[in-house]
Length: 168
Image (cartoon, rainbow, N blue to C red; front, side, top):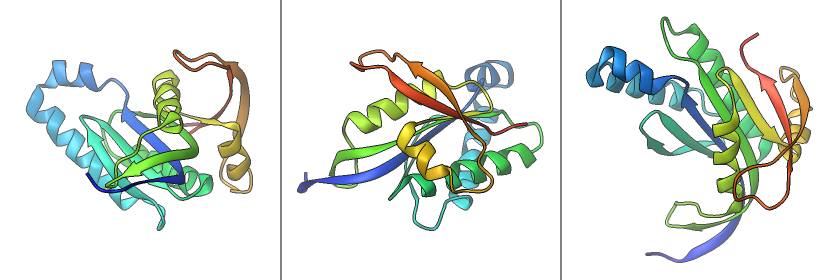
């Protein structure tokens, strides 16, 4: 294991809504094809400063140096998926903060909260925290709305959550 360091980043975690049902209905081969196409779409939609660091099943983890890069990437991925015929909808969470990075892997509260946001999102919804919403405010295409304080499992304090409804 290499030297660990603390870094400040923004995370975008997004997955295909209904992927388990898709797998049950159409089989593993079809699901694998959809998941691989999703990764191709996500890679092609990355903000120039963002990178896809991990894929597990139908979920991708993208890291960007700041919130606006993560939001731009999310909006591009959602728009690209919307253009795909017969493709499942996405749901996503975006949060940033200080984390530990050993060997290009990430650990810390910011990543944990991003996972909680993603799990809380509905199909077609991007959820983010207040610092990300502030960064996204200057992006003309983002229509961020405050949905209030949300309590998440194993997160001590309630978190102010914002939404960007990607599919209108």
